Length: 206
Image (cartoon, one colour):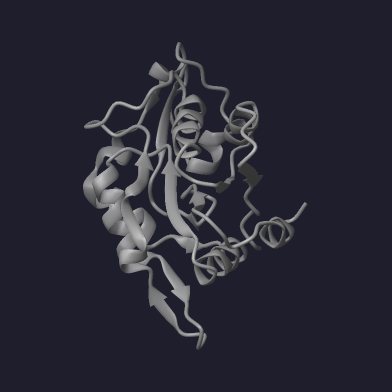
């Protein structure tokens, strides 16, 4: 089932939320990496490469997230990122239909992520003009599950994301969750929530 078909199935009534990952879902981030310790030394991984790693609570210590704790790098990784047009078109459709917009990312530095997205994320209005999302992006709906100031429940990133969605499902009549990582999608599907529609993101257009 395509995203467009999901959209057609869902009536524009009640409280509806589109919940989006950032990296390799809305944007391909630039000039930011996670570093993995190997016997041969450190290896720099892009967010897409990192998402394919089989990480457990025991092996997470082998990864260094220092660039994702650097405010300048975090902000610029979104500002200079390559937009994933196919997913942004889907995003536009939900904005036009009045859905709430939320972010659910494995990043930390939640306040900075929110501010960077407000300065970068745009939508097309009824006239076809691009405008910054601005106040349509509500701070309370931006969740960076590895934030240092907040404690998100769960031992892994996908557990943390699933727990956030489980709580949001009590507040919204329907949630469409779009993420590029199959582990996150599986974790959400395993919750068995009838008002939540998890979908894998389209990949970056070549």
